[in-house]
Length: 470
Length: 105
Image (tube, rainbow over all chains, first blue to last red; front, side, top):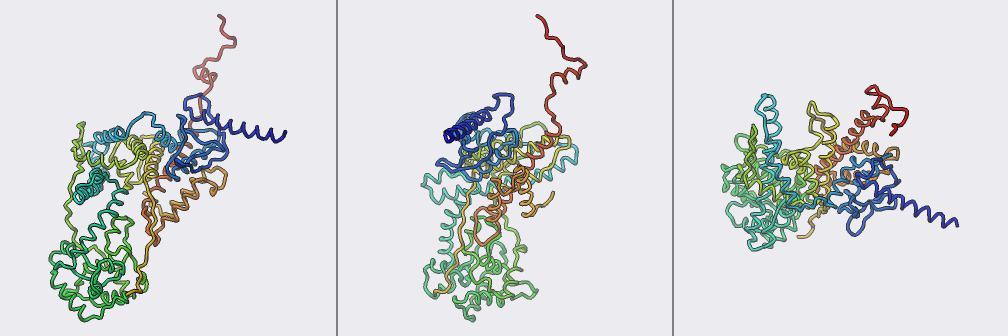
């Protein structure tokens, strides 16, 4: 009899929880507040994704479908919102849950295109574009804070977009390439997996035979193998992109430098066995050569060597994959001598004159004063549409929320592309703190939602090249 | 604008998590292992991780902003919003009092 009673109690308990969940989900059901009816919140993984469990009951959306999210961090964040409820359930504090429910239920039934259209409409009346013409200090402040954002917009989006065009030229008959739309992470993936191997191959094939190539000793065995050259040439196989360097400083005479290198190679006893010694030799002898005025003779070569030895500052996949030495930090870099290390650290690219990049400014946004709507050219809208299309459905819900709260597409773009952070924003004088915090909470929830739905994590381990083989 | 080091950022995040754990230890919180593992993994190490340190930092700042704003908003509204007043109190405001007998039809 006792066991039957216990079973009934458990059954009633979970039925109670389920009933309370239904009430809590119905937003406007009764005026009464729902008490916290569960003790523990956990997440579990099922076939469609991650689910949240309140005690024993699986969480459901207001429309009754099962609450499933694609990524674990998002599920954890949603679960912790439920866990943060104290005595009464306050649905207005559970912002991430709200976004998840909207994404799952899609109550307004909008398709992806409609959502993107809605977001783009905010560009016409973007806050950043509307400037006041007086008082003077306000104009200055607007110029100081908002102009950089428009500048950033020009550079950040248009450089990524042309990659699609490049792909189309390389593979003109591919259907997949014809519909490329790029955002930050997918662009980096496409650059590092698609473009880079193609270009590296052509550069490596071309360079040894062009007049302006400079060769440095190899310290990457795998790279040496890949070129498939004779054994003598294999001794000097890492090639620097001299054409690129030539553009940086046209007055540098290619042939004279090349002659000096050839002389040096004839004299020096270069062996690929001991890379450390080779680097040290070059560093201590060649790079210390100074001209009559006391300036380094080979500032660019120093840069090239440093670039091929050292792990790039950036973690960005495309930049690192573009390095000729795809495996940075050779094993014995740690054993380089002190003058070499000092020399490496001292090499800085600051003295190089800046390249005049010819960038197509397809993203043009002109700020206006007065009531007129700023004129946004079609190409800008096309670029931005492509950018937005690269986000998946869920992330777009977060995007929409961010844009609606910020009333500005440009701000949302720079926030979600991690150009800005929320904590940096100040308050308006006569706005209530309450509104300020409300706005901040909504925007952070939206940004977090976009990021949690569109990130990918890969860990690739660095491989040390095998130095012992000849 | 304050410049938060990563350690300060982590500490403030854990403070916020402590607030929402209300009396349970913070290590039992659902987000705690995730936060700690993200901070550990995304330190600058020898492994190449595609999601860089800056991305994690941005996400941490955003989450901190979310938790902090929600808590502060809650505090303000609790402090000022005492709830609705009863019918009697509302009548007293205009100097009236409720009738003793029910109205006769």
